[in-house]
Length: 173
Image (cartoon, rainbow, N blue to C red; front, side, top):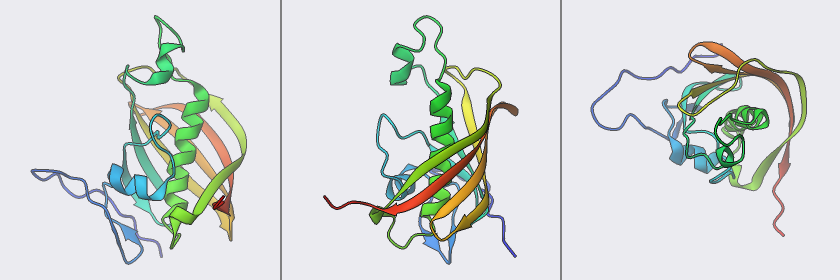
C-alpha cells in the first residue's frame, strides 16, 4: 500500500527540506533537491518546489510565474502569456522528478518525453499566477512510462495532457 506524503505544518524559518529516507522524500521539497534530480537549469528549469509526493504514484509541484520570465519578452509584448508548450514542459519536469527519485544515480540518466496526447489548453497563464502541476503515473515499466498531467491556477484547470517518456543513460561524450 502506498503512503501519501503531505507537507508538514508551517514552522518558523525555512520549510524547505530535502533528502531521501526510506524511499520517501520529505515535503516540501526545495530547489536544491530538484536540481539534484533534474539536469535543467535557468532559464529552462520550470519548477520551484514540490508540495506533495507519493512514490511511483503522484507528485504536485509549484511554479511561480513572474513578469521577469525570459519568454515574456516576446510572448507577447504588452500582453504577456506563458507559452503552452512551457506548461507541458513544466508537467514533464514534475514527472521527471517523480521518476528520477527512483534512480540510484539520477545524474547518469535523462528522461526523454516521447509523446503528448489529449492535450488541451483551457486558460491563459499570466505573470503573478502560481502553477500547481499535478502528475499521476499511469504506467511505468523498466524505462518507459505514461503519465497524466494537469496544470491548475487558483483551483482552475488551465492545461492537461497525457505524457509518454523513456529513461535513457546520459551520454558521457
